[in-house]
Image (cartoon, rainbow, N blue to C red; front, side, top):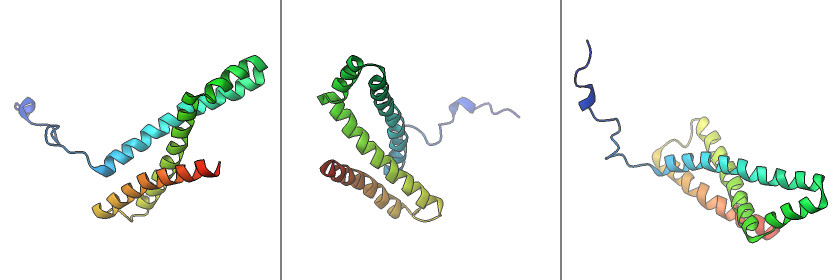
Length: 127
C-alpha cells in the first residue's frame, strides 16, 4: 500500500535540527584537502614540464611558483599533505576497531588538526 503522507514527513536527520559533529567535519575536510592536493600537484607538474620545454617558459612557471602567491599555495599544500596523512592514519586506527568512542574520536580530531600545524611548521623550519 502506498504511503499517502510521504510528503509530510521530515527528512532524517532533519536539516533544521542537525548539528554537524567535529569528527565528521574533519573527515569531510580530509576529502577537500585530497582534492586540493591534486590541484597543487598539477601546478608542480606544470613547473616540471616548463623546465623541459624551454628556458623562457620555465622562467614564467618559476616566477609563478616562487611568487608570494606560489609560496602561499605551496605552504598550504604542505599543510594539506600533513593533514591528509594524519587523517589517513586516524582512519587506519578506526579500521582496527579502536578509537571509535566519542571522547576518543574527538581527541583524535584535535590531535589531527594540531599535529598537522605542528608538523607543517617543523617542516618549514627544517627546509
